[in-house]
Length: 349
Image (tube, rainbow, N blue to C red; front, side, top):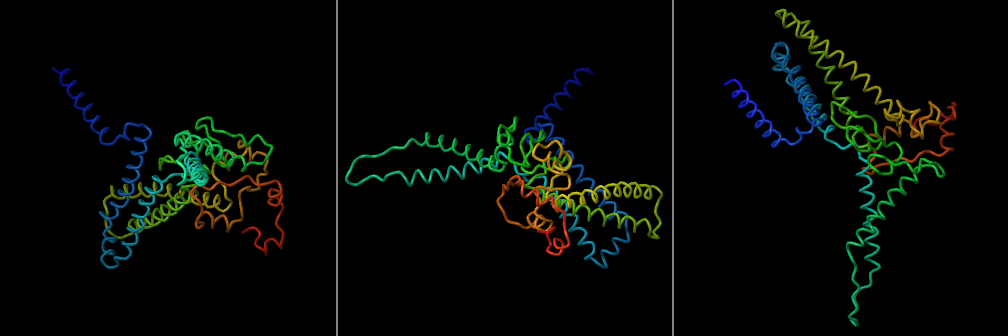
């Protein structure tokens, strides 16, 4: 009887699991399932910190009635931070395969327009009609597009070096400078920075700016929440001991998260001002095209102001690739600053 009940329960659980996988196919992938669980945990953590305040902090509730703008601004920051989190986690970091496809399609469109313009029109005085095999033309254009991408990537490396033939062994595509294959996403990413476990995606050229704004919002929210928790603990309202214990535990956890967020914000701000990535900074000696460049030289930097402008404001192509600097450009970057350079803002442009 017990075995029969156990078998029935197991069948019911299997049917429920199959139904869940049918409704949400992404749950069948272990990586996506763990990412989904982390996202739910992060949202729940935010809601717990918010709920504890509004349930137990009577001063905050009273202040909300007297000064509703204060709580309104806090709730707007709370909602904007969570929205920025989901925007960043759902954005593309800029995959090399997508960039190659865009280059191929652009090149194929130009070639198709060229072939169409060269095709002679049917003459009214003649019955001769020239037929074109569309499949053959399509295959020819696809091959030309692949060659166009390879040539585009090769032109970004110095001539006469082995770097011009760098091809990803996993994606089987020519890798432009600053690109790296991510084994978690199983794709090559333009300007690869790192793979963020909490976001469930890579941070690269396409979403690094969104990632920075998310860190900025999360830091501000954590700082404001910590201030509200400290004000609650310092208030004269009588509280049970278990509430003190919960608040102190949450505040201690929030303090460590805030320290981590502040360091992360400062670190990525430094990377932005010098036009670097985390991968390039940490693995500089292992990256072939950065190995022989001095440590204090930032090969892709165009000055702090221009780096910041291009990171935040410059409206450029979705897939932007930077060529390796020439030897003369590296020598100019290696030259120490003088007083005239500081006055002329050489460090900023």
